[in-house]
Length: 487
Ligand code: GBH
Image (cartoon, rainbow, N blue to C red; front, side, top):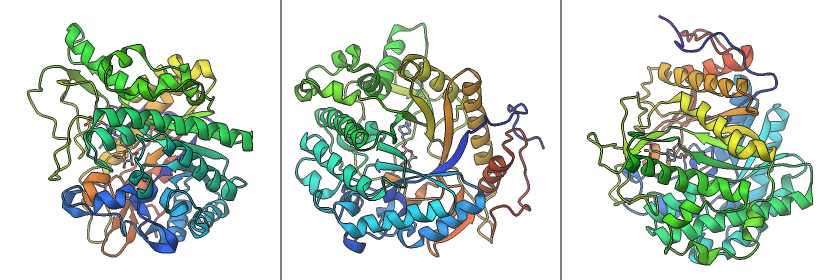
């Protein structure tokens, strides 16, 4: 049968980097090894009812012990760059003092990557706040931003000579509003005011860290990764629906973009959240700090959505089946609902909408990053599907192959429209701990058997290796016979 139906014959742009991404808590395990202490995710995952089936990251993919094997597999696949995060609770177990053994691990990892010819892309914060700092108030407290700078400098002290691309935060929207407002993620608080305070202090920590790292080394590539949605009104002619989409866009996208690229919070968002205390936390000079210039904006894109104030006819079933009750992550979008549009969905129930990625990248370039001279990388894009391994553990995941190719094709569309997108990281290199879903959802191009910790490249990994090798997007192979990347 035919391959990618939409992709015309096309090549990846010159110099475009293809990588894979992971995050510390989702893969490392080794909970109390070499001085690591608990983060908010250890506490949360060990709270009954918080994660599907009571799964925790205690062992996860055992990457802390198996990193050499994982790097070797990346090398066999031809992966050009690896985006990973460092665990704050490994580096600063009590949130303050530096644990040299924690840094030793990341030094071993980075050296293995460099030896394999894979460029490390280091993210300092992917949601795993040391529990000791949550006990002192967490992100809703301003002091946490100062501790973040100290931690960042400790990692830079050790790895600054070998890692040139640094991301401060991954998806502060999730840290703030899924962690402190909806309660679906650690630390599980459910307060719009705490979410807003957390959002501001996360961004303050970002800006302070950019300034601190910049003054250490002017040659570093510094950035921030945000998660985005492409919010459409269900009915563009209905002002209520337009307002629903505006709120979602404002409270997910612009609330983080405007401070960084325009030095202010969006006026409509401030009006929406009036009375919830955000402005009480904003001190003179904060927005100047947050708008410190960055070199690269990381774009995480999974899906868009259509929004209205009316409840959908078919409910979206996107919440994990935990026993905890969660609330909306939006501090001021009561009564706003997402409406399924009949598009294909992943096993997260997220709509597959590759053209949304083109629209997003063009918009970011025109409205934010272009004027600032900031380049773009897609730092996450990927999908969970209902993988069915054969007896050898091989997964013939054609839907994921198609997902990757169609989204890469959308990135090339954006590049052809003049947007400086310089790379793409598939989320994720391997199946891992999918937060409140535990191990129930698999995003990897490499399958992990959690009983044996065996890694098996899926068809999508072999196809990704082929794209990296050929730089061609049009040819979709349905074969599993080729040996690239397979053991
Ligand atoms: C990323 O976050 C994380 O960085 C990563 O750790 C995680 O494993 C990966 O995604 C997969 O989940 O309103 O139902 O349409 C994802 C951020 C923000 C993406 C909310 C989906 C809307 C879902 N998510 N978004 S819905």
